[in-house]
Image (cartoon, rainbow, N blue to C red):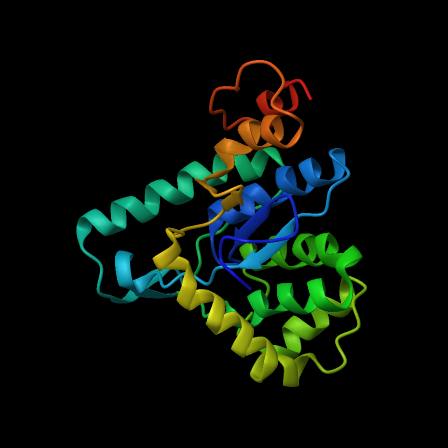
Length: 230
């Protein structure tokens, strides 16, 4: 995979452990369906400690932390911001107790794309909500395999895939992202453009539907996105 190129009309980068990716899943899947297109969904596994420090909680209390006061404020604001929108979708968003290695669950995206693309949306909708309710150990390959099965995707061979071929694909893609100018999720890539954040979905819709009329303003609300003419 080339980080900026695809045969699909749109590349979508997401990470299971990102609250902003969680907020974006439903409206992005709805856009894909409404346009009758097939987007190229890919994992971007965030290295959160590299820019926000690390921390671990136990029974709601911080027991380990390398974060500064300003980093904690950024984290708290990010959760408050994302929670407002995800609750509108009928979901729950709880802050994580630690910084997860989400690579196995993200490799699940590659597995779904390559083995049962029609069920990819089901996988995303099955893995994100329980993770953010603190119900999933996404570092356990058997848990991720069970989620694939729950989404209707045969997981036979997934354990080996996430160690070998899938891991190699994942790691090779991650090495390309920062040099290509892709740093966070959700990121939308099309025709050489890189847009970070769900608020760009109105523009994505406008662009993918022929750029009729003036380009829409940036908007974060689902209703605003749906109001844009196709």
